[in-house]
Length: 143
Image (cartoon, rainbow, N blue to C red):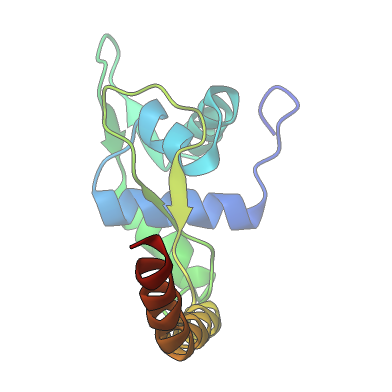
């Protein structure tokens, strides 16, 4: 617990996986992923308290303890197949937007999206002859 903030397991796992994936850690990276500066600071502080990251005195850069992170995730039996929500940062580094990320879709959500796309294409194909007829009628009556 850091200043009344308790990092739950899911958030800790997401943060640690993000560190392993990006091979870096920063407040901006966590803010883009978790949505707010305050939350990012709390996560950084919690990860530092638990020894996953550290700063050398007088340094601005975080030292990442990859071995400890990998051991923690292995102990939690987290594999790539586990479905933990992940987000893709879609903002430019110079932008300061609070919530600017897209959720990566799991297989079921992706199948739902694909199904909706097929239905939309089917409806468009069915309506093409109607649109053509309307265009011909418009041209006929406007000339």
